[in-house]
Length: 312
Image (tube, rainbow, N blue to C red; front, side, top):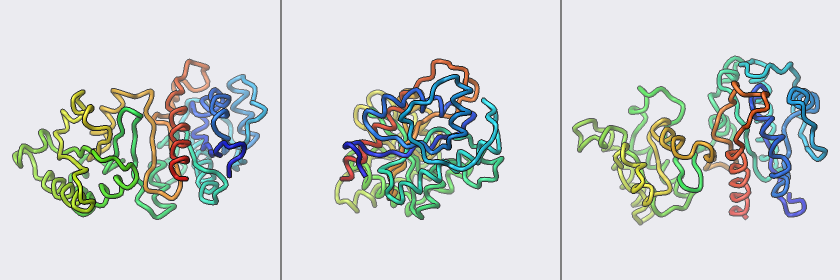
């Protein structure tokens, strides 16, 4: 599994009409010092991307030949590019499941391209959840702060109906078992965490779930429900590194305002290790040789290596 004491990491190449392949090229030398990357892309598509970027393919650029071929259309939503990014991701998952690699790291896909390709999933996490039959937890952040999402890519009007004591309790238990933090902040749903029922009653379910999860572990791990508009204040962030948000934007808006270029995506509660960049395909700058920030990708690779070492 380990060659020269470096872990093997399969890189899902993402949407080839976006910035993912350029990030892979730019960071290859740096990440190769700490891991053995295996890129899920075939020679034809690799050469087309390199030609479009006018760069040389590194000699040690190891690939797993994901099947497929299409014409690159930088910055364009494309059925074929969406399908290829999905196939690349599935190849990376299979490599990890077969223990051919120690972890996977994913470059950005485009959800609209997946939709055009008739892929039923809205993102990576949903695929992992279905593939392994496990409730994968989506956690995003960086060394300063991490946010786990109780609900993810669903319309806002459906969030309140999803909040119930049983499901949230299990989510909190699974989350603790993965991060092992003794102090986790759980956000309320409503403004002011409902002001004791004045602005809604979902906090009753959240409070019961917190109480039940703490009782399960026989210690006071989960705190809340926290008032959402002050949960990410400087003072609150001194007390908490890990937060559980009730819905997507509640957790990710403050995270990206504070740590957009540094944050990553981690899938928890799975039999494999998966990390990802926490940004999109940036079609507007793809293949324009602009100054792309690669810190999220570097951090994602480093976190994958950290999780590999913790697993041993």
